[in-house]
Image 1: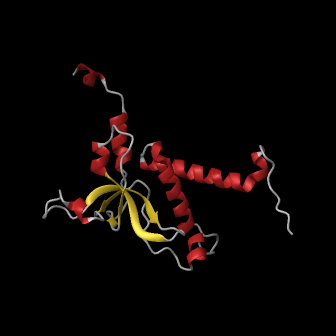
Image 2: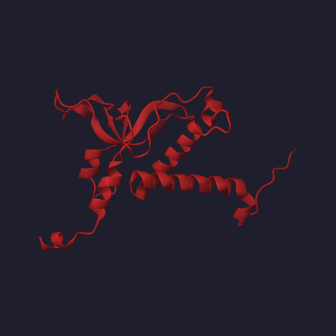
Image 3: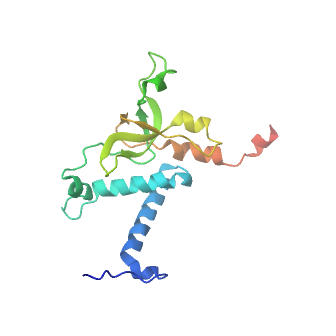
Length: 180
């Protein structure tokens, strides 16, 4: 029988490897939340996104990524940054009822992540926030995410609409607004 060494209860410094991993994930999630402009209430999505991107992009000195080690092939999907503006199509036909027949084929949204199946395999679906839903539900605590199978974004530098819009909405009213 092999004895399993454990850390000392109440002394996190004796569990350095796990503590460092937690710190790395927290710092990464904070950074992508800041870069995206999304409020901190989306921290759980940011953590999942950071861990996913770490697994599909971080190989050491020519070694395979964690994704490749697990699934035997590189990640085949397109990589988009957290919180970037994308266009998407609804996954369900009944969600398209209010869209005009000859209107745009996609809706504006914000990418929150990649939908994963049990076992960690990518379902080829994305998690998206609809920009109209954010605007409409801004005062509430909950904005429903959508799962969709196809997203695309403009080539070049990604845009982050929440970084541009939210500071204006959250800013205290100026003197002109108080006079109204």
